[in-house]
Amino acid sequence: MSATSGLVGGPVSALAGASVGIAEDQLTANVWIRGMLQEHYGVAASSVSYRVGWLNQPGRREKVQVSLPPEIDIAPVPSGRTLSDLLATGELDAVYSPRAPDSLKTGDARRLFADPRAEERRYFAETRIFPIMHVLVLHRRVYETNPWVAQELLKACVRA
Image 1 (cartoon, rainbow, N blue to C red):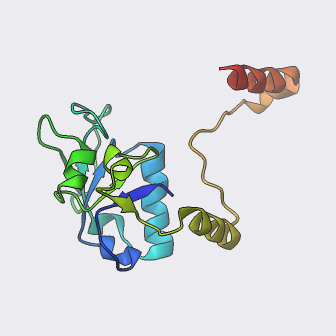
Image 2 (cartoon, rainbow, N blue to C red):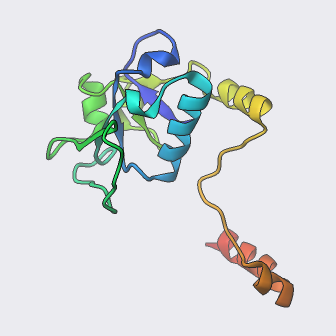
Image 3 (cartoon, rainbow, N blue to C red):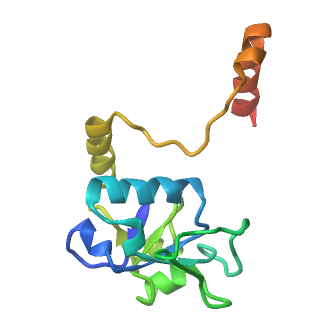
């Protein structure tokens, strides 16, 4: 789980009531992170205020119009600002992202878990789930007719 935080100390449940930066609501990593935090750490998705923006460069907005329940508080970050910048200044409490914000690299933020790798191993041991970013799917009919397509699809993606 890749989440960075300006929150100092305290349990993960301290995210409830926090202001969290995200690149997009439907970004795969954000969906996984919200689900994991809700199911395994008691942080309901509706307990967080989401602010949408680009991680290290200003200008990103939702690519697809989202229609969320009214209990989800989501809004764009101020024009010209980044999630990393807002995290470093304390205007955001955390950022959910598959990539590290610059503020983590400069020491103005920290990871949500003191030992992220150990937490990932613990999560996998408990759930047997290794969250992935993307899935390749091949229709069964195509595979049954042309089984070689599966290997070629994999090879093409590895080369890409």
